[in-house]
Length: 380
Image (tube, rainbow, N blue to C red; front, side, top):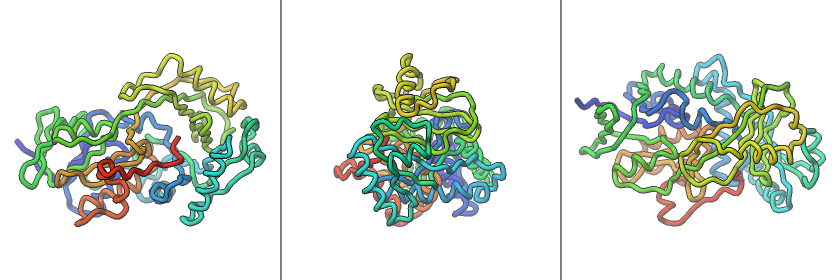
């Protein structure tokens, strides 16, 4: 038996549920089905440090994150979620250990002013005054924005889940979409449970796994999986207000509301979907973190964890229609949590637009064919 629905969204992560909620809000009475092969928060969002920043070097990323942070600030009201999402807006402090980084920060700052981002350039002394845990050696300065911060990825996803359900969005966990088949002016989504779901519009929000479904319909996009690893410490009294980004050390370190300190430190690994941590990761990551933040030396590490992020040639999102009528895609390129509010709005509008949505246009998949890539200078 073929079941029909207006929209199928594949993936119940922050992109998928945000798109579902926005679409339901904008289209009363529409039927929306969300499919996810796992359980709640078992994918990338459950392995995410869940931080957010406006301090980017390209206008398109600034706009996405500025809109998203404004939504996060009012998430309890927008989503009727009084519990809140443990939002901590203590800023991002981006560190410069060489002149090239400091020059880039100053260039970004001019762009930030144009878009109303309240960033400021700090001297090395001002950085250490803000975060006494820092190693001042070789530090030249930094960039800071008090609107940046972090939140709980689990509470954010729970808020979206509950809000979408209130609009009668059907969310099917443990249901894997295995292939997509064009059928007239509709698309047929076939699941691992031998269900066949017919929809006028299908949106893929499976991030790094998107190529698996795209290939079933003859599409090939340069989206791959990249393993990432992190560590979490025991809970500690508040000692680290802003999220710390060091391009020299290739890491992000933050203290969440419950007191634990999270560190995501880049380590070279082959592309793939392996979420296991490497045996040398803890010693490698600890050296990087303590070289920059020696004041964290006495805090015990509870565990390390692994995850996967999506990777594109320019490390930018892929948003919008595909070559197949009715089939859309939203891939985050590692900025899924922080851009999910804005992307939900954009994709909900893009699926029903008569032309290319202006906010999605820079992120179109056609750039991979034309070679008009948009690399972001502030990618860690």
